[in-house]
Length: 344
Image (cartoon, rainbow, N blue to C red; front, top):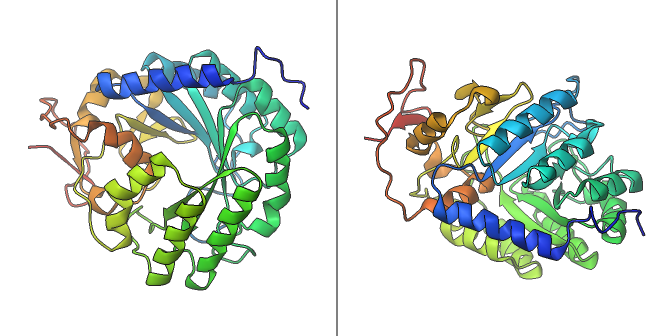
């Protein structure tokens, strides 16, 4: 048992109320961010070959800066926030940032490789009111492509199953290496053994775009989704991943920069982790006008994008007509063939 009290634990009714508020904003409002992914440190304790979101030297983002970013996201009426990295557990103030975001009424989650998880960290995150954690595990044994192995963190999964008051999802990426395809099935089975959810994504290249699956990987995908069924992942499969897995593009309107915000360690907003460079504006200066502009901006990278977090935050607007915004794009906007062009 932890020392978490009833006043701090994220209870079922509280989570239900938060989910209803999220749905109301998603359906009823157009220009409110639904998810902000906020980097709390770029440093990571691992060096996976397919990842481009880390370094091995950056200091943690200072707490005062994180709190200011949370405050501004709250002012923009952001529904949820995910603290990420790098490896967020390398920031000693992660739980304080979680608590502050929860006090602002946001749904709060984090993404970690799990290597640094301890009972103490779980207790701290419980007490802060964390509502969800995603742990990334790609294979059974570490290799040069992915060091996020089940062998390294299976004990952490057991620790979470015993002590975490927040939901835990184990996420695997298919397509990392062909010979390790069946590893993902074993990871899903292990997650289920501990009572944890499992999800699977499709590997993207350095720009976040398509890398289709092999027949063996397709079979593994089908197997793991049967082991751990999920309505959200089923919708994402039908709307996005099915085409991508077969090497086909999707016809959709990406709302990155509006419904989804990616905030780097220096506090600047970018479309996503794989399309850093635009709008490249300080979050504290980000306004409703920026959200409106990016909501209506066509992203040239969208058809073959594999980033499920952006898919999911954009799917609420699939039936909304994309009315062109009269805002004039500022000088320095990216070219149409690279990533973006104004909707005509």
